[in-house]
Amino acid sequence: MNRRYRKTIIAGNWKMNNTLSQTKTFAEEIKPIMPKGKWCNVVLCVPATNIQSAVRLFKDCHIAIGAETCHELDHGAYTGEITAAMIKEAGAKYVIIGHSERRQYYNETDFTVNKKVHAAIEAGLIPIICVGESLEQRELGVTMELIAYQVKCALADVAPEKVRHIVIAYEPLWAIGTGKTATAEQAGEVCQAIRTVIRKQYGAHVARSVTIQYGGSMNAKNAEELLAQPDVDGGLIGGAALKPADFVKIIEAANQE
Ligand code: PGA
Image (cartoon, rainbow, N blue to C red):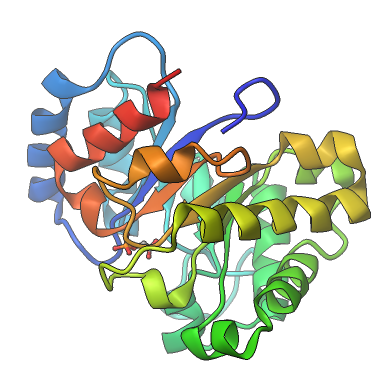
């Protein structure tokens, strides 16, 4: 983390978990244990049906709400889809874009990710852009090239003053939901490489403002070590964000000096 130049953001990704009543229970449980005082920014990305209620439920404890995806267009005949403007009007501040599960199961490509990033920014949402390599790609030694390609594609034609405010989440595919975490060195190395890609494209001023998270089996035990890396500015947390006590421990790790 480097709080001097950029925000530390701990974001939960609930995926397809938690009904509205379960969301209420989560809010009741987390409220009394949320750390007070020094805050890192805390976000919960929730199923679309819960956004509006979650905004209200988590307001008191300063948890901002995000969506888990959005469509790239601003309206149209796309049954089942929702636009960035719909998400914004529901009260969300963030939207996850290009999560590996979306890439894997819903055919999202680097090009659709770029379109969605533009749609999110246009609607006034902060995109949390996910990038990451598979185990095969890591073993082949192409991680850095792949990540650079994903970041460049995602940010194509995005203005520098907008890039400053986006969030990038480095999520190695082999670490998501597997209980297998990247080592702090591996996470730090790739997050640093992401900042270098941004610096080359947009300059040092923009690069040092961008929040770069690590995601993939981050939990109460390993958060502190991962967040100690200078280029790891937070986490995108799946499983451990479903349990209030675990999520709070990660927030506490991010609040440390
Ligand atoms: P995990 O999920 O923490 O359960 O590995 C992270 C993510 O998919 O964003």
